[in-house]
Amino acid sequence: MSRYPDKEPECLGADSANIDLVIEPRPRDLGGFTVRRSLPAAQRRHVGPFLFFDHMGPVDFAPGQGIDVRPHPHIALATITYLLEGEFVHRDSIGSEQPIRPGDVNWMVAGRGVVHSERTAPEVRARGARMHGIQTWVALPQQDEEIEPRFEHHPRQTMPVVRRHGAELHVIAGTAYGAKAPTGVLSPTLYVHARLDAGVTLPIDDEHEERAIYVVDGAIACDGKRFGAGAMLVLRPRAAVAAEAIGETNLMLIGGAPLDGPRHITWNFVASSKERIERAKADWREGRFPTIPGDDTEFIPLPEGA
Image (tube, rainbow, N blue to C red; front, side, top):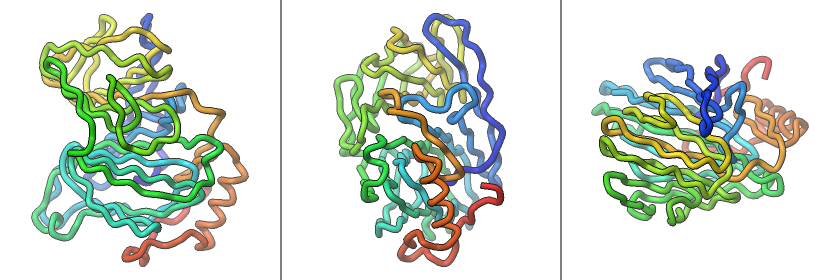
């Protein structure tokens, strides 16, 4: 997913011993396709290594319609794509061409520079389909910002699932609830998709210093308050927190270790150095990034003023 200019998500004081901040995303319609962005927000630029959090859909595409995110560049970050429904095809300048389906994990490390696209496959587009998912950006440690780009695809059946009474916890990246995902993270990371039955109370894993809960659908009670779909609860460090599902509920848990320094974000570029971002902008403008085999006839231009 490419970053677009928009109003900041709304940040609300939580008035809570355990919740530091509540972020309400501002939905944006991208031509019949709604994206809700929670990070970055004015009062919270990141949670652990997570710099960017997009909730895509759900959307029902009519026959002939689908996703067409044209080729665009990244540096010094990793993207994590996780679908709840539907599918599309990831392509990148490394040479990867990989469909992603519900429960799979795509992990792409941009490092010194990568270009990728996301499109609905022709056979899926022809019949129409539903699409619903989460895409995040994760900052790389400063020492790894210029590593070689790489791409990993982890099918659903290879990912760890922790089952508790009424809770199904899919560990997408990093470590949580005694499980470790195969995703090749480069810093301590928490990323879990939690499916909760009605009335189930889930203690939030406290292994990681920085954590947030995002309500995908349904609702939760947490610290004596009710939070509905779209709310992101940024927790206080190491606070003992539990979420009770009000009806069947899907949550995303994100977090990890604090960043090793500030990050600058301009359009799709993230780096610890403003000079590195300026160089990336010039490289994209002048066509010096690598191209995507099989998807090299169009691209997203650098926005004016970026």
